[in-house]
Image (cartoon, rainbow, N blue to C red; front, side):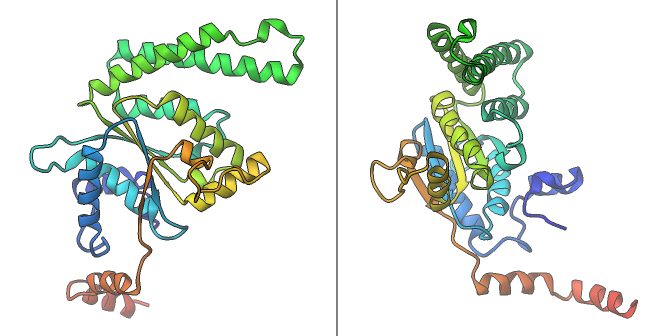
Length: 282
C-alpha cells in the first residue's frame, strides 16, 4: 500500500495520521524535530510569503508535506496557535484548464467559511474565470470579436474584491493560512507556469503563507520549456523563479541509516511472530 500521500488513504487510516502525523515506527530519524523547527519558522515569518521545500524525486517531499499539513493543525508550541492548512496536489488537477479554479475551490473546501462569505468569494471567482475565458476566446477567434475584449477596469475591481474577501476569510482563521502546493514539477509546463503566476497575482495577500514542494532545477527546466529560452535560471538574482519565491528549505534525501532505522522499527519482537506465521502458511 502506498502511504506517501495520506490524503489518498481511506478515512480510517487518515484519521490515524491526523492524530499522530509522524508515528515513531514510521518516521525517519529527526523528522519530527525538522517539522517542529519548520513550524516555528512559518509561525514567525511575515506574509505574504512563498517558500520552496526543495528535494529531488524520491526524497519524500509528498510523504513529509502531507503529514506536515496535519502537524501544523495539531501542534502548538509556547502558546502559539495551530495553523490552518490547505493542501493541493496540483498534478492531480492539471486536467483543469485554469489553476485559479483549482486553488480557490480547495481553499473554500478546506476552510469551509460561512455560507454568505463562501457565496461572495465564489461569485467573484466565477467572474474572474469568465473574464479569463473571454480573453482566451478572443485570442482564438481573432481581435475582431470586440465584445469579447476584457474590461481592464472591471478586471482590476474583481481582483481587488477577490483579495479583500480572501483576506476576510484568512482573518477568520487566526490570521494565517498555509497553502501547500505539491507536485507542481510534475505538471505540464504551461499549467505549472500558470500556477506560479496565479499564486503571485491572486493569492499574494497578507496572511497566506505558500509552500511549494518542488525542486527549483526542475521548475527552471519547466519555465525554459514553456518560454523557449533560458530566462529562468535559479542561481541568479533576477531569474524568473525569484519573482515568485522568497526562500527555500532543503528536505534531505533518505540515507542508508534511515532505512536501517525503519527496518529495525518494523522488525521487532511483536511483528516477527506474525511474519513467521504468515511464512508457515504458504
